[in-house]
Structure formats: C-alpha cells, structure tokens
Length: 106
Image 1 (cartoon, rainbow, N blue to C red):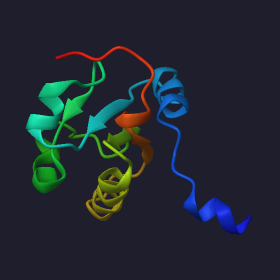
Image 2 (image 1 turned 90 degrees about the horizontal axis):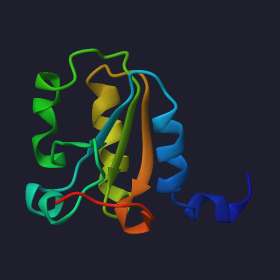
Image 3 (image 1 turned 180 degrees about the vertical axis):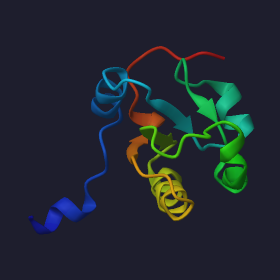
Image 4 (image 1 turned 30 degrees about the horizontal axis):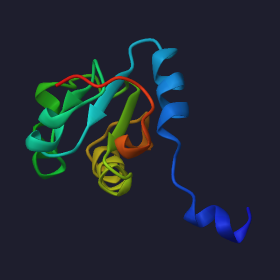
C-alpha cells in the first residue's frame, strides 16, 4: 500500500455498482433527515448517524450486505464501525453522495 492510499476515499459510483449486483443488499444513507430530503439515491434507506442505534428496526438480518454512504464518506466510515460493533458482518463504506453521478429522488 502506498502512502497516498491512506487519503483515498471510496468511489460511491463504483460502490453502487457492487451494491446493485449483490443479492439482498441494503443501501443505507446516514445523513440527517433534512439532507436526505434534499435528494437521495433511489432505493436507499435513511437512518441518520445520530440514530444508528435504531437500525435493527429496518435491518434485522445482521448477515445482510450493507452499503453505507453519507455526504463525503466521513460519517459513513463512522457508521461502518458502529454497525460492526453492533454485530453486522458485511458492512461497506462506499463514500459520499457528493460524488454521485446518477439521478436523485426528493
């Protein structure tokens, strides 16, 4: 691994491609409700980072693949750590919606 690799952020668009081809996958947006309402990726579920303890009401299966994103990738990185501590096994930070090239729902 090269030194600059530590500063690379996940590529959301690439992560979405993997999400779309993964059976049973969940796309989790951890931005605030207000941010989510301004525009979100179709099919994503919104649980703000501050309310992540309520994730079990939406994601009961702790073995389901979860792809997490936020605005820049920082909050989603925190969410991945929290979800893993909660027992979720297949959790991936795919970065921030700021890099998203597709359509958004409002």
